[in-house]
Image (cartoon, rainbow, N blue to C red):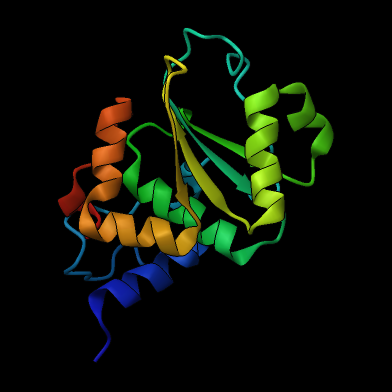
Length: 168
């Protein structure tokens, strides 16, 4: 027997397969799967909001990733199932040093952290600039999704998310 969470993690890690399973009977999902085409982030992409230095910005999630990293793809897929609005998600390719060097001291510090540790690294940055939270890598994000802590963090940061019963 396959554990439902293990199956879901496997499915999410292969987000491109989501479309193939769109019509399959998946009792663990209560809403239709989001297709991989709905997730705007692709491997190796650097997307820094132009407002990333603006103190009046909205809260955001930052993923520090590397091109071709399967764990980065898995985290990206998991977040496509959790976030209501993908506009709150910024991905930084740690190999695109020129982009993140221009983005400011906080982004540089987080990028260096990812380089010194592992990718992906997920950070929740509050819009008022007073707080940032390191969630961690793929395993930490998966654990926090399972026990509800990720939702608590998103609520504190006022980042819109899908109801937890929609993905577990």
